[in-house]
Length: 115
Length: 112
Image 1 (cartoon, rainbow over the protein chains, first blue to last red):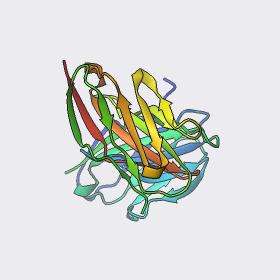
Image 2 (image 1 turned 90 degrees about the horizontal axis):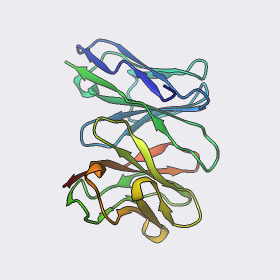
Image 3 (image 1 turned 30 degrees about the vertical axis):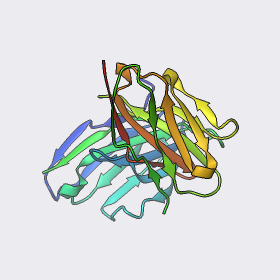
Image 4 (image 1 turned 135 degrees about the vertical axis):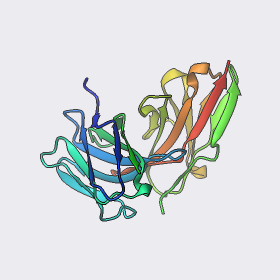
């Protein structure tokens, strides 16, 4: 499979626990995005990377959220001290950023349920 | 604040009916515009995009969209929908090399 892979597909956790998600982008893609989506809403931007550099993090994102892309390949998104409001689908997308022509390829997402 | 508005939250059509889904954005200046689609049980995928040139762009599966700069709009159209078009449709806007911002989506149900 040469698409964007996300692991795990589903995660159920108790409030207060930490969770970590992984995203493997398409291999030659230099940009990697994290979005969050809840039922009836569009994907909400969380953060994105150009290679290993984190270019922007949403101001709506609390300090409990952190993301890394250490070698410019795969990325992890960690949520510390999870809350019920964190329950959502977490989407990863990657792209080859060529000026004037960027198409995002999305993974299937990680569905997080915080009990 | 940057925003993308999709006013139709849920649209129900019969097969062969025509479709138009609205999208408005609040940016000034140069923007790139996209429509993404999410079929039931599948991941988001690109339907069509506008970067420059002809404001009427054609995408996959007979969809098209028209960029009207004066109205800050990028409405999606299809002359005759099919049952297989049942999906959720998201408009998205990108300014310069910035991140992609999505609208809230429109759920389309097509009945045979």
